[in-house]
Length: 139
Ligand code: CMP
Image (cartoon, rainbow, N blue to C red; front, side, top):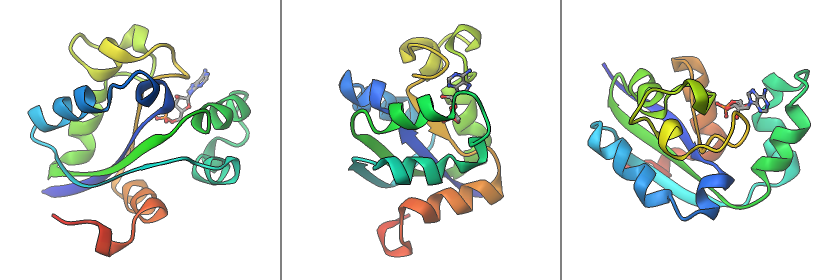
């Protein structure tokens, strides 16, 4: 089925001017960028977005990292977009990511791993609504 997923191009990637190269990977995989904006997250917004990880030892580091430079938030649309995006991103840890994936090519570490993608339909809906209003998404 056609799905939408929330994608974030993270600070390590925006700092290195990789937005276009990462977007090319999405488009080559058949994912359409139906909404996109470059924003500077606040610490409070980063903390809220990643609240499911609040008890993890890396939570503070993760939130600090996400506010260290702008991010590009986007909605990707396509057939099985959630799984397809996760395939294009590669494993969370770039050391485990398959050749040709975004994280294998661009990520610096498990923390500074260039991209985020929703992991399931329910979280995709929540994460899209966190950053975008319906009017901002043009399929
Ligand atoms: P993301 O898909 O954005 O969701 C949660 C993030 O936590 C994950 O990508 C990683 O960037 C980060 N993360 C996961 N494990 C670690 C870790 N061991 N150390 C630092 N960051 C981590």
